[in-house]
Image (cartoon, rainbow, N blue to C red; front, side):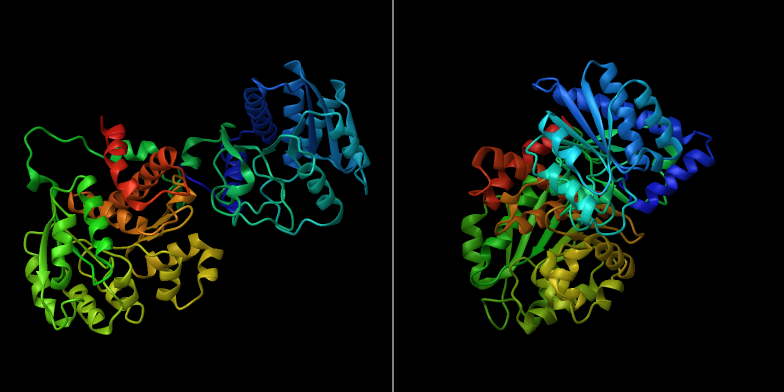
Length: 514
């Protein structure tokens, strides 16, 4: 499913009206009716009899006028507080305000003060926020800030129309102040600002209402940002055929580990096996091989002896290259160490790779000063940085990465012709052609050591099974989140550990493929 910026939504609205001849008043009617249905569903099992609509003077307010009419027709008591004078309202919004007024719905004008709003709040059971829509692009101050604060302090349930008022629909940042909604009914397509953080904390439950915009506009290839959906997994993941063997599902090589960090290699390998890899080999320093053999039963190991048995260095390059024979994919990086000698090995192997590769953790560190190796890669390349590693790659701060994660992912993936998995709350997948996919699945319990190693193992496993780099990224990211949610439901978020997620991988894959 596509998600859009404010400008992209404005373009869809404009083309719907101008090219497809669907009048704006029809779209407003559909939006208000769809929102009313969502409100009725929300209150079905609640003791709510009186609804207050807080309306602005623009089209978002017009949606609120339509909603109020449908709620009244459905038997609810409803009144409207208008942020301004009725004479300030024009166009389609004015048409629907006049209809609401003709039906006897009370409309309170708020000019300079919000006394009528405060009184109405005390007499209401639920508030519908129809103050600002997606077009807001300046800080909320003074009078409007007072309205938003009054709604937030009311302790009543709040349902926002399209996006919580005060939230930037593109960046997700509050513009001074924003409504804290229990539910948001969004129209046509979700807005990026309601999906990513911090905006995701303001929307509550997100409900999509169809307002009749043509399908071809909603699936336009020019819209480059999408949600990862379970339906995508159904299309991607293939059930296993009867006449297959372990070689059918790929042999993955994992170059990982160092003294004190054998666990990273172990978790990566176990996650890869649980994700369906036919064969997995871990190439690690000879000094930790005995530990790996004790921890891993189904996984093969290849001890690499270099200058230092505790770490991999440039002396093992030819050994790594020899191991690539008949391997379907490779993961380089988990627990590898940041020693310069290790970096020489990483960069040399990278420059000679001919099979699909995933780079994580310390491998990313070693490429931060020589990023052209990424661009020159002869095989498909996936990078899986967390925000700190992304900042290191770009030479900026983690804060700058987090301020516009989508732009960062898009620019890096296109510039370096790679697939980028930018981890974190709402993990992103960026592609060489500029697409960005947002994952909504997962929970705060996954912010714990080793979950990134698990994700790398999953993506690398799918890559080795013959899935395209994009399919491997989407499947790995989404199923990783699903497994994390299952584990959190069982263990709780605070005590969740990475190996809990590994054990849930087969369950989530089985759910999709069975």
